[in-house]
Length: 349
Ligand code: SF4
Image 1: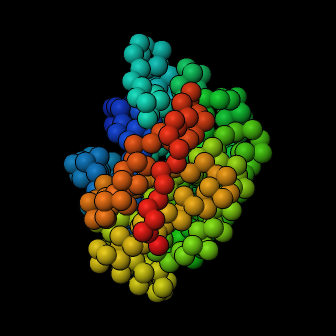
Image 2: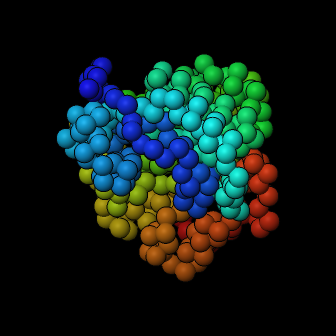
């Protein structure tokens, strides 16, 4: 029977897969993923996960485990936990003889990219054992969470894992009200940064994902954000603009309106016009590259394929070079980029 606490329905997750190969190597993140739960209590409005087959194709499982009628509409209101996953993963790794490694993914395991592995104490307990299992088998492990403050409870595990672990957080914008409007249940950006700083001060490698930056941010705001992000000495700062073609974009704009963040709602709404989206996205990518260089931060841009189709040839070459360039993150024996940073076009703003 499903349980319910703080309006969130919870249950056990019957998923059998322990470790899955992942396409996130295209973003230089990992070759495998482990997810400690199905569902996520942060309920970010732009989240792509509820539109993936893992949610869309499993209505019966969601209904049975957590009384979910519509996995997409109810996103943020249910969590199915994979208790005991760390122990199963440990045994699985003992038996596993082959390991998939690409140039971009480096055989890294991502924990967790379809939920937040430190969204609460129960998820955190599973994550602790997952990180232990992976790193004790010398598997490079990338932990992504919007709650690194809670992850600090496992600082001992991260410190023991040494070079085999990095922890990062999504910090799309430093404006807590705007972030709170579309990530209603996730910790404030200041807390995310504070958690990462503490990990860094205790010798644990960090990374930041500025994803997605908001159209309300001008160049000065991005500079302030990058200066703040530098405080946790990240091994890499990934960046991508928001994509208004995502299935949940409508909900994102509505959430900003409901939270009375009108400037954000209007700026997001304007992105439905292609020219405005192209202008905002190319400006943000260029500004992050430019400021990153000034601050000597290892930045890696994630330009969208669709964006490249709608820009002039020179801009397209610049963006495509970023898609092909190795990430500058010193982690998992990654070779550093051999090419210099792609030069942005002289005709851009
Ligand atoms: S924390 Fe990540 S997985 Fe959870 S709702 Fe937000 S974007 Fe989706």
